[in-house]
Amino acid sequence: MLSRLVSVSASNLKGVRPLVAGLVPASRHVHTSSQSLAPMPPMPEKGGVVRLGFIPDEFFQFLYPKTGVTGPYMWWTGLAVYLLSKEIYIVNEETIVAIVLGSVAVYGVKKFGPMVAAFADKLSEESWAQANQLKDGAMSDLTRVIEEEKKEQWRVEGRSMLFDAKRNNVAMLLETNYRERLHMVTNEVKRRLDYQVALQDLQRRKAQEHMINWVEKSVVDSITPQQEKESIAKCITDLKALAKTSQAKATA
Image 1 (tube, rainbow, N blue to C red):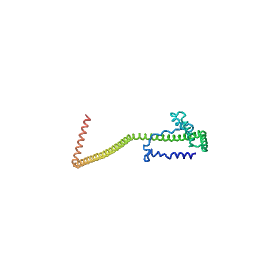
Image 2 (cartoon, one colour):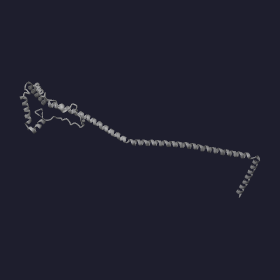
Image 3 (cartoon, helix red, strand yellow):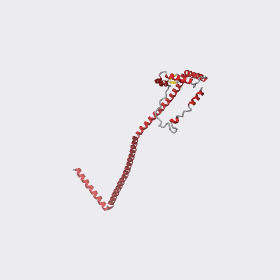
Image 4 (cartoon, one colour):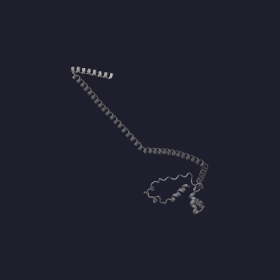
């Protein structure tokens, strides 16, 4: 049955020209625009609504305005009658096998579908929890890095004040060193000047002592023995006169 369906489809497509060559040239690139950086919409967690187990509800909604409520069902019924009447689809043992397999598949889905879905949901929740944990860890690390960066920027802003303080400290150290050297030079100059003053005083005192000794020696050397005797006699006479005057004053 399937082989006949394939042969009929092949015979119908023999006279059909390929549409791709007419629609899109071989030398033309389909994706010519830049890739969009917009975020992709989230994937739906649940599937859409279906009817009869496999037909999307959008198909029925599309035919309702044109055919009414029974239109989609009549369309499927007409398609089945057409396939059977034209012997495009022949009912044989393969059809029975397909019905049995389909029934088993539907039973399996109905029976084990909720458990598989719960297991898949559990795996999905664990994956999301792990992803959220990784995201939270990355967010905390990035937040910490941002805070450290802000702190470093704050330190950089205060670097000018630190440099000013260091410049002031260096200027104060240079001024202190200058004043210490100036004080040392002043003390050294004062010490040398004091030495010169003391040296001059010593020389003056020695000159005075030498002059006094020289004058005394000269005077002593200029006195003759006769002058010495006369001086002694005159001194004795003066002493006697002073003694008489003192006695006279005392008796009076």
